[in-house]
Every structure is written in structure tokens, then in C-alpha cells.
Image (cartoon, rainbow, N blue to C red; front, side, top):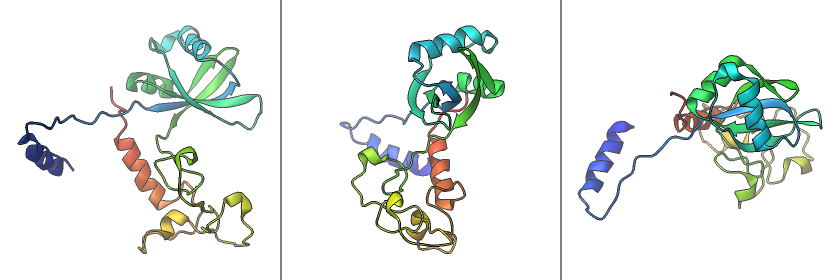
Length: 193
């Protein structure tokens, strides 16, 4: 909280050799759903600016990553944008990109590892043992042979409290632990202009 932050800051200020910098918040993420696969950064920016002039977007959008789509010819393009652009795009709900009119949606800043199922990193940077999102076993989900009717969330089961029932997949949006981490990730994101 802010009081604790101030106390730590005051203690550190007594030391002349320590520089203190305030943490900066990240810009929000936006998702363009169903964009033609392979659209370049340049083409995306040109389309957003020229075909959606009423939005008055003058900044370049930064493509962070792409996600798969049901249609193999399309992808969901995730971009990092300024808070003002984020607000304008969400209010528009749909934008023109090339010959398409695509849905715009807020994208959660929370990342989850699909190897160990923990939050805050991806499997590319994971050194933990794999966890199954169905049964919480120490194996990859695709290798699960356990037949269970009610899934067991590895994240909820790792917390010894009755507040976490764990009767869902570890990747579920219903997960209480996920909600906590989602809230923390959104606190570190700048949504206000």
C-alpha cells in the first residue's frame, strides 16, 4: 500500500548512494479479432489511421504478439497502445483493417505459463515441472490419462485455504487465484489518459 511504500522510501532516502525511481505503469493491450494472418506492423498502422479517421489515432500501434483464430487464415493481433488510443478503440468496438471490419476488445495484461500453470511468465521462460490443467498432476495436460469428472485447479490447490474450491481447470476464468493475479496485473497498467 502507499503508506508502506512511503516508509520504505523514507528509509532509503537516508542513504546517499541509493537512487529511487517510481515504478512506471505499462500501456494497455488491445486485441483485434480476426485479422488476415501476416499483416505487417506498417500495414496495420496505416489501416488504423487512414481507414478509421474518426477515431483520431495518430500514434503507431505496437504489435506485441498474435494469437491463433478458429479460421486458419486469420489471427488475433494483440497491440500495446496509449491509454487514449485504448479508450478510443474500445468505444468504437469495431475498426476497418484492409478490407475487413474487425472486433476490438480489451486484452488482459495477465500472462499464464502453460507448462507449470503459474502466472507472471510464459512456458518459454519456465524451469518448473509441468502441471496438468485438468487433474493437477505432474505431467502436461496433453499427456493426461486420468479420468476425472471435476477438474482440479493447481493454483487453487497450492493455497491452503477454504476460499479456493479448485473445482475448475487451472486455465479457467472462474479461478479465484486468477482473479487476484488479474487485479494485480491491471493495477500495473495505465488505463487513464
